[in-house]
Image (spheres, rainbow, N blue to C red):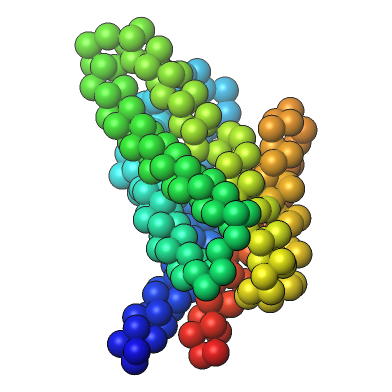
Length: 222
């Protein structure tokens, strides 16, 4: 019994730290792509590829942190949340878990497409620039479509998890009320022509991740 309690505490603590780590992944990705990398205005696709090749290590770090590391941390959070709701998992929570698992796969796939796609583009630029440009556009399309151009899957996960948390009174009402807002914003990004929806989703979800992490860490003391 004591061993099981110890394992549960370790899992919740790991989940709490992972949730905070996911927020830090958002911050790191923003710093890299909007701060340290600044593609000069007016460059055509060939110029953008050359710029990215000159800063390949930084670009790879951004995608590695923002997608691959984020996906690994999300897997830990999903497992910790499963433990929190394990005593009486509802159909709604199981549905939330499904969307969480799908989001995990999409994040990892997006990161691998982005990294491998760039490497292939850089190699093709030396022998077949036209083919490299076509691959670059295809790679951008896949990365954007899978990895955050529309935040429907992540939004549904947060929304359904928050509704389930309110119903079962787990992890605090205020956290889940914020989760309802985050989830709704994520779902609304299907209207991708509306400005600032993705930004609003990202900022509010960053706060939600930190809050979720603190709530999981507090749960280890309960």
